[in-house]
Length: 284
Length: 311
Image (cartoon, rainbow over the protein chains, first blue to last red):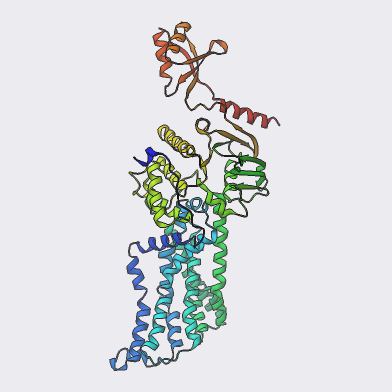
């Protein structure tokens, strides 16, 4: 007999009370990004800087291969190597592109489809929803930052590369990419929550990234003070990397300020997200 | 024998949007069954639903759903509630099965159970053929059914429907009401329907809650619910009234004498005004005046509002 002919039937199961309620939203977010056109191509291209670093470590460990001889002759410690890895402009640009690709429509899509009442009429807290969305973007940002850096870190003792490795370097490799990924994830969502258009939110994120760099660089050049570079996301990444890996800071302002810029801005973005989602929760 | 606890208890619930008092000391106990939530625009219907869902925090008083406080135990409250919102709500990029199953998982169902249940409820609401279609391609009526399905997926104890028949054609409307009646008819689920369409409420609700300007005007059972009754009309014939009466009675139409020569007729269930014209034709006369009568609920609703306005 067809279900409708039988009429409504109650469900005999029990709802789970424990567990991370946001898991289905997180996994749906990851799946959606993964199945996007060009996702595999883009995400595999993010491994490029990490792959080069890995080859350099192998070349250093196996001088008989005579690979990259001019590049590796000055490589003596791991912290300088990781500093250059995190401070290069390509990686920060890659982070912005991956953020836009993976996060620009995660919340704006829900806004466009008016999905908030469907979520928040269920036993789901705002922090569950936000942690799931941030978690999905974070997942894709960890791929080009944390994962290659940890692989390279593991490759140093594995291939017996003659690189000095300090505890601070290991801690920096483990923590710094996570801080960056969390910042970019929350920043992306905090911008995209103000628009229902994924294209517009992507454009705005990219413009903010470029504009902060332009404003910081111009102000610094015109007024002769490097402190204005704190406005620049890109410059802050290189300055913070210098702080983490005890390298010479490229700009003339305290490197620790640049490092703490990211957790501080992450908190600001999380606050914005919480307030805006709260507003949507009550107004729909 | 223990008395079952009310599914909803409202104790002096007040809420205001700035200077606008949206709910003003609303107190009542709702025992169960289907309730119609009535009131003009701005009466506080949607605000009341939001308070029950824990979206809004009452300024005074408290609301309990299934014995749980909507402020202190909101997760437990939301486990008991299925919500069918008024506006179009979708999860983009998904087919209906994936969407309903996903929301089932968010409610706390396991992945396997959620998929199985999603199929069941989509069959129940009549979307079995379209369940693998992208939900963004659905028509208005299908979206209404989809919203009902997602509200039912975790088998809540309380179903809150905000304008469930909005945007539906007459057949679709009737089907939606039948689905809701069937859901509540199984006894375990209670339903609150907020609607502007009084005939819908009268058709399926056992009780009505009338709100106006945030105040609870009435909470009463609908006497003599007319599930099996038909439409009521005021009729004036051009003559041969006795013949018309006889023809009508032969066709099962109930007749009362109204004021100023009007006949107050009640058609058998399922028939339409064409039957009245058939009777006139049979009596070799014609109809001079034909008007659908106000329902008893409409009269009660308007009376409650006018009493409140007179205060």
